[in-house]
Length: 284
Image (cartoon, rainbow, N blue to C red):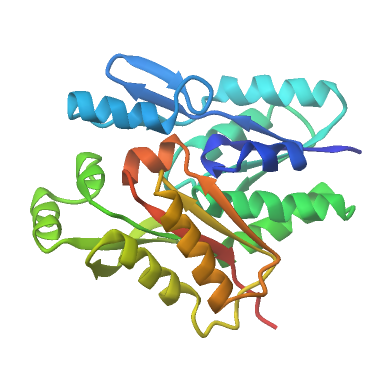
């Protein structure tokens, strides 16, 4: 039976990748003031920046609801597809829970909690897509993706913690101290949750390169099929320097893929956030 891949919009995969792997998205919701929009359909990350700049308020995000998933599942189910549905970590959103409830209305729907966000989720989606192309069953893909999700290394470095503060993810005192000391915090996704990691100091353009070096230098535990550079609108020259840094430290990646983060990461992390994301090797 044919397998259709569905993911929520937090996966941050580019239009080209969605088309290449025939992936359909279920958008999250972005609320700004008293208006609500569909992520990537009716609102863009730049719209969020405009809103914050004009109002001083942060946009809010909400998961696709059960009805959203039912409509998408019904469409592809009626066309004779089994469905693989990938969701942002259940610790960050109710997307996974809503997809599971909707899946109970049908047969042949397999839901994966990717335990990640942004292209950390996207890596698990593409891991499954590669398996499907190789002819694995939906049950095998679901099981393998659940395991692969534990090996995704998703992290970011943030230019300013103002957005994290506005979103309630750090205190006013911590935000004041970080800004005063010009600290650029690293954020790791660990067991499905965002957690602070190393604190960098200095100009964000230099900090980003130090962060990339910390993530990749001296590593022999990384699967070298693909690495994502995902950012919230960094300057082109900064992203190019990151690519050069990756190619210098780890020249054997088959794919180095740049993506612009969508509305969810933009809402919580703000401008000039950048991450390199990849999958570690499994235990022998």
